[in-house]
Image (cartoon, rainbow, N blue to C red; front, side, top):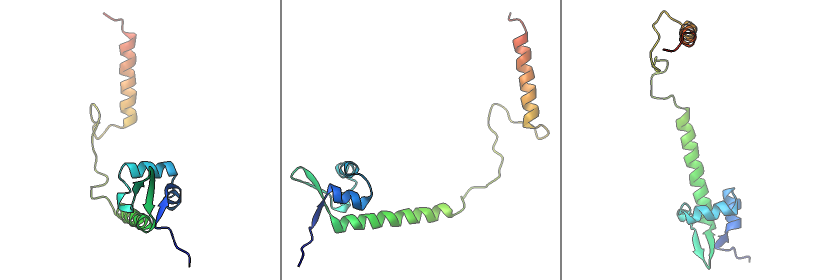
Length: 115
């Protein structure tokens, strides 16, 4: 009868979490893995494997829920005109016309001798 270890080291935790052992230690030190059974024993971080796997399942469920919410349409009106910039254009003018006029005005300003 084989006895499973109750606690696992940072390397095994890294495999379960899908990141590097250094990232696991960093997360544990920051308190992000407290609910996953992280504990520093004898100068090394150890983890409760069952709680760590439950933590991963919880994060997966949260990610799925966030993805579902992202698929919903935004609660704002789409297509509404929002003016921005120094001045908004009148309804009869196009952006290209405005650009041409602005460039001509700037060329005239450069061509005039400074006073």
